[in-house]
Length: 281
Image 1 (cartoon, rainbow, N blue to C red):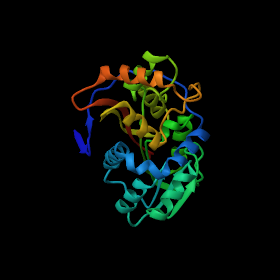
Image 2 (tube, rainbow, N blue to C red):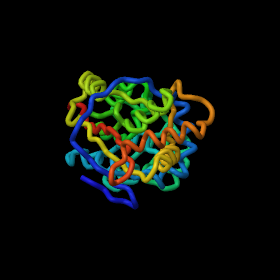
Image 3 (cartoon, one colour):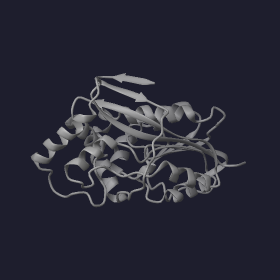
């Protein structure tokens, strides 16, 4: 399945790779980074829109959401989509980045826009029919807490639909940097098997849990790194090198990445997890 937009191609494959665990960024840095990126985010968020649209399609048609929550709403693109699908419902949008909320609020789609954390939802027990979260929970250090909160705030029969990123994301960029200096330059993500185990132990029924690789193509490395920065998703890892990256290392990175070039351009592969879970009742 492919999306063609501007000069890039989006490809999806059913293949799954094997992952390894790594540490996650500090959420305060995540919030600050995405707040700074709020103004530029939508101009480069084609993958995010493609993933979120696919996730929204996976929300069962049987779900009647009188009350829903968009977790990690960002600029509110899917807040507005949820508002259209569940027009008679009461919607709420939550994000850890106040800069994103300031961008989303004027555009509407939800009754309330609030700053908050998926690991500590500021909601009453059994108060939501649908929790929707696209490409946000990968930044949560305690995903078991995210699932526990979902179990708490969902009504019986309520649904949690989320997408995330797994180990193997941006592997081409990671391998290219490894050939240059061995430092951590690419964000780390959880293994798919970690998500499997945590979801199985959550008390929620797993309706769908799968990984789909998405490949984006760029004319050069600078186009990729510029897009990551504009998204607020550049390197936020603990242990990342400080200061500016020297010209010699950038040139070495460009040279190392060339071995991945394909006819469409330089690939950047994202291992995207799609999940739909339901509370019993």
